[in-house]
Length: 186
Image (cartoon, rainbow, N blue to C red; front, side):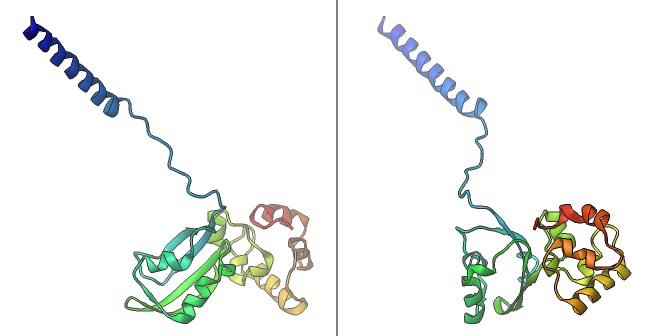
């Protein structure tokens, strides 16, 4: 009788083991990725560190850009470190271009991504940050209109709002409506 009971016990334990093993592998659902921070993401372009590190990198208030770059094992000069510690530089559409010698960062220049890249990433454009080449990335603007926009800016000062583009000959309300989705609302 004891031999029969021990066989049943072994069988029950084996069934429990296989049931538990099956639950682990067969019914496992993918859990969503954990949300580390609810902070809004900032899109910046880091260039010049080499092909393995170049590209568009997300940055948020929790993550310091300097820490992210140090993870790449680059050595940073004190002047570059000072700029990277100042989070006022980090804003949607910024371009950080590093001049490197081997694994050492010598110089940093800060600018803006080209308008075509900002539009592709859904980063709103700002009229004061546009170059002549940037204007040509908008639909319906060729080299001559881009040049007129640039000449108007040089002659009469920066555009402080999107609506001020009507100062340029050939730009009216119809064109502004066509371009409005690409610009910051002001």
